[in-house]
Amino acid sequence: MKHSISVTVNGVTHEASVDARTLLVDFLRDHLHLTGTHVGCDTSQCGACTIHIDGASVKACNMFAVQADGATIKTIEGRASNGTLQPLQESFKEEHGLHCGFCTPGMIMSAADLLQHNPNPSESEIRHALEGNFCRCTGYHNIVKAIQSAAQKM
Amino acid sequence: MTPYSFTYHKATSVEDAIAQLQKLGDEAKWVAGGHSLIPSMKLRLSAPEALIDIQGLDELKTISDGGHEIHIGALSTHRSVETSSLVKGKCPVVAKVASGIGDPQVRNKGTIGGSLAHADPSADYPAIILALGATITVQGPGGSRSISADDFFTGMFDTALEDHELITRVSVPAVGSGAAYAKFGNPASRYAIVGVAAYVEKDVHGTCTLARIAITGAADTVFRASAMEEALVGKPFNEASISAAAGHAPDESDMLSDLSASASYRAHLCSVMAKRALMDC
Ligand SMILES: Cc1cc2nc3c(=O)[nH]c(=O)nc-3n(C[C@H](O)[C@H](O)[C@H](O)COP(=O)(O)OP(=O)(O)OC[C@H]3O[C@@H](n4cnc5c(N)ncnc54)[C@H](O)[C@@H]3O)c2cc1C
Ligand code: FES
Ligand code: FES
Image (tube, rainbow over all chains, first blue to last red; front, side, top):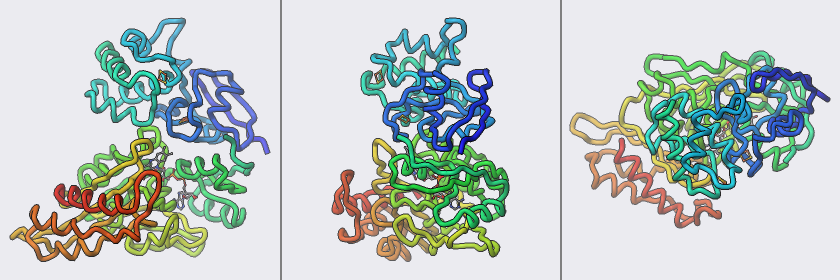
């Protein structure tokens, strides 16, 4: 059975019909073609699929699209406007917070969740907040620096 | 990874959640935060034919002051417990346990009711719930009842919940001090390889009059370390008595053994973590 859902993603409302078992991350990537949200582990460990649902960071591989009916969603595509990067995105670039970039959308969505609750986090608070996001390239050091630098700019 | 097909239903009230589960039969399940159930459905270890989503039941999300206890609604997320000023003020150890579950994204979705109902042998909440002697309130087709934490955890992924019984709230005693939790977590998932929760009471002379020590992650289910408890009660509560009590490690043959830790290492960790928790009490 198909379910009709209505979700607002990055300010645009989408009406769609989905199977109950369609994962939210697959809905975003395959139905809405928002491929900035990545699938790394597909087992809710790595955080590459992190998005915001009603303002809170969530792993989109671990919920069904039908459960997002009525929700307001923000993905990495909703951050820059008209090609202008937000401070967090800029800082990742300046501080070399990414190598291959696979983890970066999730890192930025997690960092944004942290900064909205704690605008001036310590290094250890940043590391604690990133426990759900894995990076296989950078060794995390420059990611932490990027978030510290973004916090100062914001 | 896509799970097997299922039908999806939303519950509109506690009564409706129970009625729908009865109607949809044995292969139906409630879904709360989905952070235990959905991973196992994706791995096809679990294949419910129907999911009844209870996330919309706002009446199960409140955290309220009951005087000598705090009532935590079953659908309170780990994050809402971690950040609740009531919990932080009146039972800080529970907020601390919540803040160490998984990671921020897991805490934004996972719920206390789901964690207790699932009764994962490595979950954090069962240890503190048992150490504090909390009460779990459940509602079923015939009405509601209370289950003490001592009776609740019956085995691996097994609890005293009867068919069609929904956890509605967890009542934890308001314990300002004397309680602590020390976990040796899996570095990837943060689940407890061994986690020890302790609650102690002392008299005016500093003698330990009550000790409740609960260990998660180590065995099939959370359990009370009675040998450690007995070794403490009646003794002056100090580092020497704590070390001696914590030395009563559980029997290796009762310990789990897996990729993360062997049975003998787990038994050793029980002592190490118990000492850390008790020193923090
Ligand atoms: C990456 C990752 C890391 C994690 N790390 C930890 C950790 O470090 N420590 C830890 O303790 N846990 C950890 N968890 C588990 C997490 O805390 C889960 O949220 C929790 O165990 C289950 O809660 P839920 O609300 O998600 O339940 P669900 O997954 O929705 O449900 C689990 C089971 O409980 C039943 N159920 C749910 N609510 C109720 C209710 N109110 N009454 C009766 N039955 C109910 C459901 O039918 C289902 O069978 C982790 C999970 C993930 C994905
Ligand atoms: S893809 Fe969702 S957590 Fe890894
Ligand atoms: S930059 Fe490659 S995984 Fe993080």
